[in-house]
Image 1 (tube, rainbow, N blue to C red):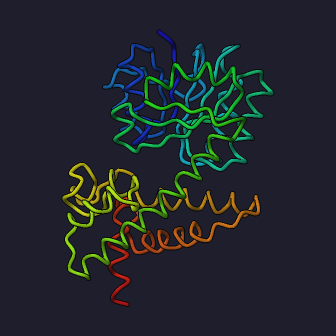
Image 2: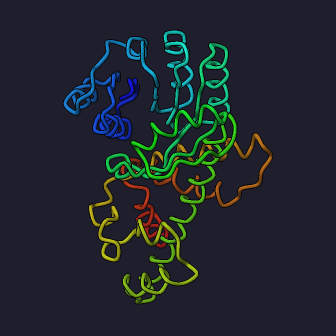
Length: 295
């Protein structure tokens, strides 16, 4: 049994911490939101008075926070308070530069560190089926992997510091683009008198097959577990897709990479968000696609 500090108990972090408790670990948790702390307490975690207090004596520290500035700020606070030889893992989705800053901060204090953003949404967090994309030194990854396996099914070492974040934003750029494409296809099929099921049966076993279609189909019916069957409740909210597509565009601009479809996908999701649908699952973008036909 390891002693694990978990900082950031939101929609993703809360269930992830609960899975660590279920795996038999001692979890000392902290969040700024009282309701999140109460839920973690009911899930079996011990609640600390502060982030710095949570990490004292912990073998491993995990952060799950909204943005790069929050990660750098929290790491600046907690790394000096960590036990010698402890490992710190960030599972947030943030910009590559902030991830590298966090790694450098840990290194200055002699701490091993890993950036390990996740894919799989709230369902994956609850079911411990997440994919972790990891960046960091080999030794740090080896230490992180057994811990991450309590919360996910696929743990991939992508390279050095920041490589996990690079993989995450590239993956989610594919996801954002492909969901729009699938939504456009179903919207066109509707206009052509083709049923949802007929298009799904063809495309899911043909060259149009992709995760956005077969696992997260944006229309009710063909995939019963998709958010389309639950009023497009997330899941993975559209405002989070905006965040990830923006991170991808920032990285592309910094690296001098051309990503025209990624840029257009960002613009489409930003318009959906601006229209008041940021809390809708990102597969709900089909609603925006349909609305464009009337313009």
